[in-house]
Structures are given as C-alpha cells and as structure tokens.
Image (cartoon, rainbow, N blue to C red; front, top):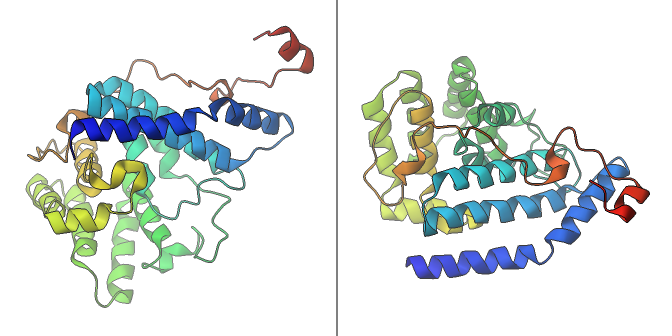
Length: 280
C-alpha cells in the first residue's frame, strides 16, 4: 500500500478517536474518583495512541516519537486490565507495542501482567498453560520469554508437543525461535524470521491485526521476533521493508511522558471547587 494511502487511513482513524477523547478522559477521571473505571475507555485511548505512533513511523520515521506514543498506549492497555471492559489478554499481539518502547519498567510490567477480563468462555490465564490451543497459552509463553524463564518456556514446549498432534509450520517456528533465543543462536533466529516473511504466511498471520493495519505497515511476528532478538543480544539484520530496522536498536528515551494526567501514579482527582476554578 502506498504511503499516501496509509497516512490517509491513519489520519481518518485518529480523527474518529480524537472526536471523543475529551469525553473519554472525563469518563475515566470521574470513574477513578468514584473508586473505579471502565476498562473499555482506556482501550479506546490506547488504540488511538498506537495509531499516532504508527503515523510517526509511516510519515517521518521519528522513532523517539513512536516510542513515546507506544509507551502511552501500552500504559493505557495495562491499566485497562484492572477494570471490567479492559483488555482480555486473549493473544500476545499487543505486546509488540511495549517491546518497541525500550522502556525496561514497562516491559517488566507486561512480563507478569494479568487481567480481570479473562473470565470469558476461554481458559483463564491461570488455566491456559495446559491448553496450547488457547490464545492465552501464547501470552504466558511470551511472558516467560520476557522474564528469561527458560525452564517454563521449555516446559510449555513439552506440553505443546504432547497435546498438539498436527501443528502448523508457524507454530513450530515460534518454538524454534524461542529455542534459538535461549541458545544465543543468531543464524537460526534470523532464518526463522525470514520464514514468516513469505507472502502467504505474512498475509495469513496479519490479516486480522487491525491495530497494526493488517500487515500494511509491518509484519507482526518478524518485527516482534527481531526486537526480542536484539533484546537478547542478537543484533540480527532483516532485509525486508516489512521489518523497520530503525526500531530494533535498544535505545530507551531519557524521559517518557504520561501524556494523560490520570496515568501519573501521583495524580489525584480534582475536587468540585478545583474543577470549577480551573486549578491543576
């Protein structure tokens, strides 16, 4: 897809979310003042912040601005997990955003993140470790990788091999990739990433990732896996426009801004008189 068309779609998406931003902020702050909030509202702001980060990549390739917006998006998504209507952590796809921020504390948060929204008809995060066909199984495995809990990663590989009789190729590649990370095998990691970049595989695995524009900006697994490789000291190069290599070096920002006041741990809801008088 041409850059102009991508930017047009991004700007349209951002505009639609911006129209309700003030209302969503007020809704969250009012909820927090009452001792609770609606997680869905956090998610709306998270998606919009993610789109703003993607715009900086597509338009001007300002990596630092992307990291800042992805930081805000990831904080919002993590906070949403505390409230009904928030992120259900059904898949690990959204982990790509905190990984690309290079913020150590945020990535640590995601490595052990849980949610109150996993009480649906699928297995919960606690149960999912024994059900490798459940999306949350992949969440638990990625979290173990982020913690360098290789014993658990290997244990989950054994569970997968025992219970999944006819795995898809890309499911096997993912297990092999984590093994390559564990063994510091840069060549194997690189070869596996290229497998995911075959056009049919790319289309199949990215077609439903709406927040990432369904593979028109990048290829999800190759980007996430290349970043994980760099995080683990394997500075591999992937020669493909669907893997923006400018995002891979580990360069944390000097400062990450909360952007929304209510994300600051020291924030307190304003009283009636403070709101009336416009005090901060």
